[in-house]
Image (cartoon, rainbow, N blue to C red; front, side, top):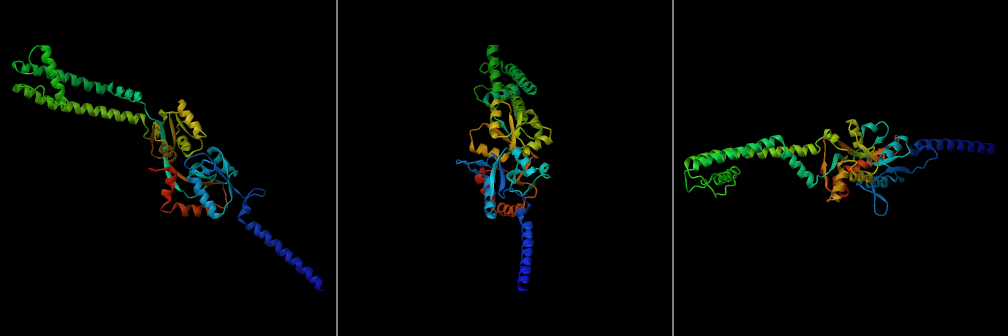
Length: 371
């Protein structure tokens, strides 16, 4: 009798253990990971300084990588880095072959396929173009001087100077001790010189009219000269400004004048596609650099943070940086759909990025940012 009770007790105890074990396996966060796969998260990274890059010993580092290390350390998450181009990162996050990537700009186009954490950095788009050489600048200035309006004003200046010189010679012809008498060529030359220094308000004082009529004519020429010089200066200045705006980049509508390059799969890539702007797409910054050196592209469209970082590290680079509007870029961690640790990662990310010193910590990687 006692042995039968012992057998029943053992059977009941085994049944309870079996049920408890099944419940425990189903309720574990790691149960959502398919059987046969490692629990170590696969973190996708690419060369994108200052967000992610390899340091001197070949270890991954950077603003986003360092932020991920802090969060993974706090949560005790085990992970491994998987290096690949940015465009492949987005594909592998969609398919679930990778679990997370720390340096991704939020994109509405990807929102249905992958998930994003709360943002940790706000940025905007930028375009880098080669700075004009001295010969190119002289060519631009020569083109401005050959502008029809500038030529008309310049011609009006010459005609006005000649007309005033003739009037001054006529008014001063009877004064033997005057500065504009004598042979016609000599007198006209002196009057022309006087008209030029008067119009430009230089006023050397080496020649002056003596007669009342001569001084009256000079008075009106002073007024006319100031007006002509003001119009000429304003026209040249506005033409220079228009030329700089035409050759520079104010908004996305200016980009079709350039041979544009961008990183494949980046936020800027999507912005260019939305606006129908054709662009050469590259996977690495080395490819972009070679394309610029060979003239394959004349402008690189990307994010202001890595572009400012590059210019801060290389002050001798002869490039101009433009920031077109309507190109917001918000950085967050991107994860595959259904990542169990997403909620916990999000909490830790907010704790770090909302601290008052987060901006200064970020600028230790990027250098001074004008966002």
